[in-house]
Image 1: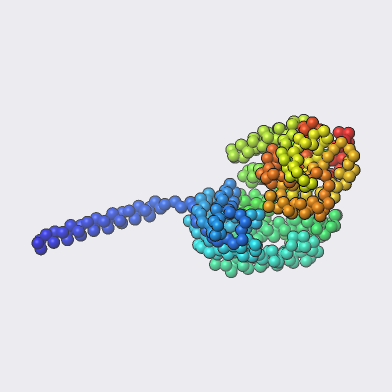
Image 2 (image 1 turned 90 degrees about the vertical axis):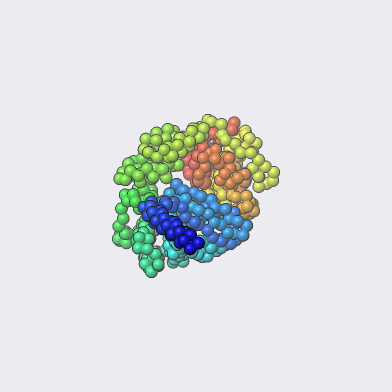
Length: 469
């Protein structure tokens, strides 16, 4: 019996040694070939949200996360790259810093939103810096209109104060040095954008039409390059800065005797970095692919200057749809839109007269600024062979806001509410990606212009005169 026990102990020791050996071998190879983690965990608690989803977006990335009845959410994000993203709840949004293998927890009250954001988790510190940086700018700079209306010296000192406060926050944060460096650079990019916009914005908000900055104003601008591909890919602030520079060059080069697409093509041709050039072309493709005689030219240019197959597919899809919006083509229609005066109205009900359609929304500033001009045009052509329709793409839950604004501003013409806001089939068929948008349809229901001049544009009355309206 003693001999049997000894043999069993020997066998047991041998098995244990074999197990230990196999464990060491497994661990060795596990160290040689670690599992690739390309996802992270995002969870949190949301108060006072009317939406049942949170949306995370980034460049070529979008994921919807369900918010349960208690306001909690949790999901994995399969990231293509580490870097900067945004999340949306209803119409509010905020920046995110996301990395593979990390976990992040968010608590927020939608009614207070930015003021209530708090993060925890392995990248909580980084995201708290983003949230606090935004609040510093919001508190220091104040309302956009008031900020840009400031006199030059006050504007500059306030801008510098906000930048320095953000930099102090970043430097004192418990984040890694690479993140700090990126955020310091981003603060510089945002400061540069602010200075670039001052002359134009001050003219508007201070109501000084011919305002020009002083000769020394640009001495305050920081130095930056616009061909840094790595920064363009990682920093939304840098992308905004490069885009602002591009837009400014387009505006400076614009001449009313030139086609807008020719100006865009000319400025794009001067961009040094091919990747950035293609991205800038993509961001302006909606303006290039307009309706009218320049459509074919724009399409040919976009296809010849794109290497991204997804972009090419998108351009082709838009091109095929826009061809259907040429002058003389049957107009897309809308059915049974709610009429402010009661009942419903369809576009087919309006045949027999020219129909000028204003696609707008109560929250759209540029739309509201067109109202006085629209009223004046309506009054001038009240007895003519034309009717004026305003189709709001407000959300269904904002119906009362629409009703009140029509009443309060004493809007004239035929006031309608679209059936599904931005997802309205009419808006999709007309490729409406921005408002206000104006459309002119002839008495037979055919397109005169899918992108007609605004009421404030003298060209509208010239168009009416050409049509003998």
